[in-house]
Every structure is written in structure tokens, then in C-alpha cells.
Image (tube, rainbow, N blue to C red; front, top):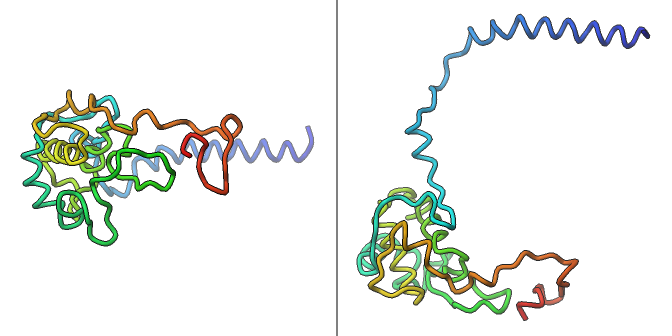
Length: 194
């Protein structure tokens, strides 16, 4: 064995011994910072909603209920009835046809209605996110979907009905592969969007 390999093996064995002895000491002498996480702590942050509705909480709401909540908690930023928002904010009502890449991406652009619920649950209302109740979230979802004429004004949104809403742009999402469908860099759009 060469001197270099022998020295390397010796260093590794010394480090291994030092780590093995030191590990027990390090565990016993923690700085005592923080606290163990509880199941309740995890539940409070585990709020994602999947397209199939997994993660949706109990509750329900209608567009009529959502109108009052929207006027109180959303209209200041997103505009009365979802149009004419304040500068820097997006409207809640937009086109239902997305045939050009530069079409404004509002709620009808979402592939799934559960995305609307998830976005509001995590980040609205600004600047006090996560303060809406489950019933308020369902009512706001119903109201915004009704404003966009995606659902009727009398439809009840809940964990069962919200994932079943068919969004107008749902079937227009494609996995873009430049090797298969081509790309027009001048117009920044795929052939399907011309």
C-alpha cells in the first residue's frame, strides 16, 4: 500500500472514531432551541388542494353568499364585480377563450376550479392571508365562477361539486415539446394558438 493510501485510511479511521464518540455527546448537549413539531402544527400548514379535490375541507357556499364577502374583502383590490381592479392587481373576470398567447390569464384560464380555491386559501385576502373560513372560500369560489359564467348563480360549491366544474380552458393545456410541434419564436406561440 502506498504512503498516500495509508495516510488516507488512517485519517478516515480517526475521523470515524471522532464522529462516533462525538455523536453521542452532541445529541446530549443540544442548545435547547425550538420545540418539537406537533400534528396540529403540520395540519395548519398542510392546506394544498389537488385538482381531483383531495385536500378540500368541509364547508359549502353559493354565489349569492359570495357576493357579500367579495364586496367586503376582495373588491378593493380586484374591482367591483371582478372588473376594473386597482393598479397592480388582476381582475377576476376575463375572457373564456384563449386563442392567443397574449390573452390575459384570469380565472377562466385555470385548468381546474380547485386552483381558484387553493390560491385564495393560501394568499387571500391581501394583506391578511389565511383568514377566510372554509364556507367563505367556497362562497367566493362560487361567486367568481358565476361572474365568469362558468357555473350558475344558484349552484352550491363544496368538496364534491368544486372539482367537477369544467373550466373553459381545461382541454387547451398541452405539454409543449419543441421537437414535436415546432415553435414560432417571432410570434412567441405554439401553432395550436394561432
